Image (cartoon, rainbow, N blue to C red; front, side, top):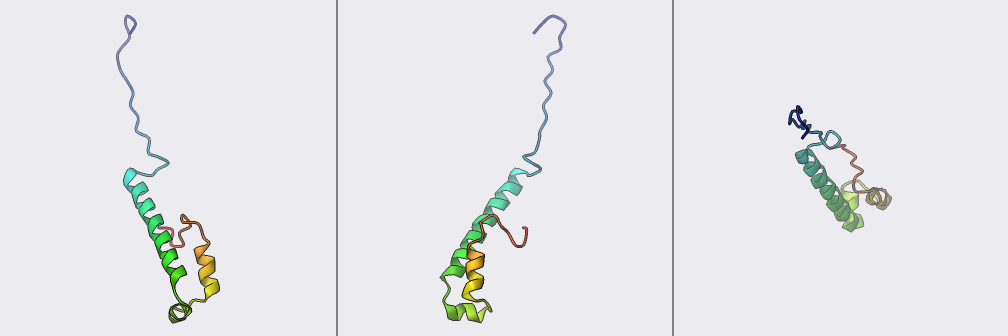
Length: 74
């Protein structure tokens, strides 16, 4: 330090694109949940799909979505 300078340090906390660690963790958990649900949906039989009102084509479209594509935007 040079003579006459003050020894101050400015500390600024900047959130990661407005997302806290907790928010990031919740998002990762949601992505894992979506991936699991889509695998379960793909494993259902045609009779099971008929019971919930879905066709194999509906399932194909849903399963092909990327894991981060959340239809509920949670």
